[in-house]
Image 1 (cartoon, rainbow, N blue to C red):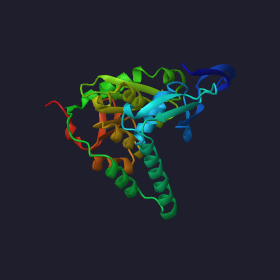
Image 2 (tube, rainbow, N blue to C red):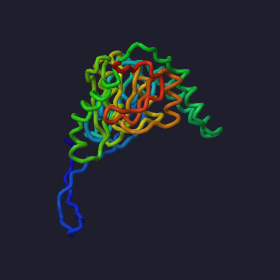
Image 3 (cartoon, helix red, strand yellow):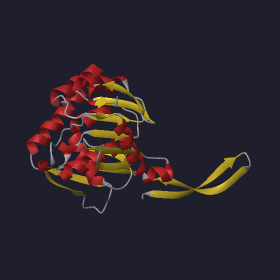
Image 4 (cartoon, rainbow, N blue to C red):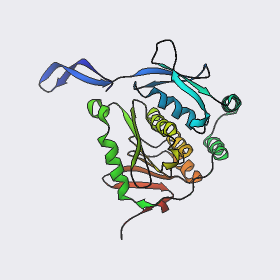
Length: 267
């Protein structure tokens, strides 16, 4: 379960005792694309290939599993390095060049939120309204997410992401020490299974930031739900891109920031 037991000195009103404490494991992961280092992150060990594939998908490097020539652990006996191989080298170079140009422009001119929204809007189509559901269904999905968080129950040190279809069925789930990694892992599983088109609702154990909204928009999900608040840029992106954004969902209550027309309540 990627949990490590360590000794701690626990203090209470009655003094101190030495006890065991379970911690979520954290290890670095390098992701290489065709042998070139692309990204490094700290993650919960396990599901490294879905994480790498999901990251490439949400970064726009690949559009589907058909763009992959392969994905494997690197041959140096390390579980902390993944190599992604692409079929279309020109597409890889174009995507990486675009990221480099954007980085240089932002560094020299200064980045602002509206620039990021425009970049996203230019590369991704606005999400159409195809799904409507009762608001109460979101709480049932959230409970399904909570029930699968084994590492979090043991450590209270991880985030989780779940992806559901339009009928509330769980398609993909992942836990990680990083909220971005958890979502990339869950998305990567769908990419590898060719089920991206079934994704309708993304449930998160975290707040709703720009990055989480961006990943959900690239996935094509219609509804993004989190247990915590949303940021202003997340709301702006959700409104612009046609994503229904629901924050602070707890006990069948929540705040719908954008496109509430997808959610209904019983009369």
